[in-house]
Amino acid sequence: MRDTSNDRRACFDFEVEFSNGGGIQGQGFRLDIDGDDIDDQALADYVVRDLRLLMVGSVRILNKRIVAEPHKRPVEVERVAGQAIDRTDLIDLSHVVHDGEPVYPGLPAPRISDHLSHAASRARYADGVSFQIGRIDMVANSGTAIDAPFHRYPDKPDVSALPLAAIADVDAVVVHLQGMRGRRIDRHALGAVDVAGRAVLLDTGWSVHWGTAAYAEGWPFLGRDAAIHLRDQGARLVGIDALNIDDTSDAERPAHSILLAAGIPIVENLASLVALPAKGLRFSAVPMRAAGMGAFPVRAWARLV
Image (cartoon, rainbow, N blue to C red):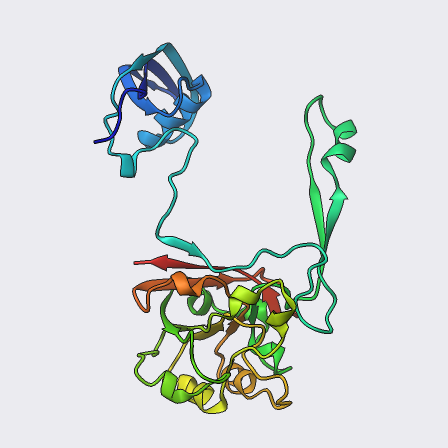
């Protein structure tokens, strides 16, 4: 049983005036809170949000007091004004990109810096107010990134033209391949998986080497016959937790060539695929809508359903 001895609730009245005229009042409201207090603005925000009020002009909080009482809302759905509950159904699949950390052999490392720092901005604003404006100089394949058909073919769509239906909230399957023999993923490893209309995420376990020299040596890759299989079976997107979906010793780059010719985006450098179930999830990997780019970094995530 949960210990309720430290639970606190805010008791208060409120008055709401609407910007288009009229108003409402409430007396004796009680709200579960974390900690020992909550300010009036947070309570006002709670009233507006919880009652789903529109056209609010002002909210006044009256007769507020904090009492020791057990919380009434179940822990799994409890909300406190201004705080969001953790989403256990969302799993981040992106690597963090750091300043100066090499990502791909032969390409420059990202450079992350302040265009305007908090310290430098303070003279521009009121006392205690500062802002940071960051700057990133990097090639577009840095970090977890998506390849559009333009990455391989000059006459095909770039990342700005990728349809949301292909890259956001896509039904997905995970093919867990950790411990496989050899480097090449062939069609037999995928034959039992229904990939039609789905994002196919290849969990090879290689992401554990991220940030080390080993990451750029001898990674697993998708074989030509497996790429043909995914194309012919109607995969919508293909992702892998390795540096490249191809063996870069093969100058034809068959996986890129086959998948991108069919309009199937590729996501490389994924993370945390081992944490995902084989099915029952949806996948998103959405880049900035930048014209003229064949690839671009993404924040990739899975949503368990």
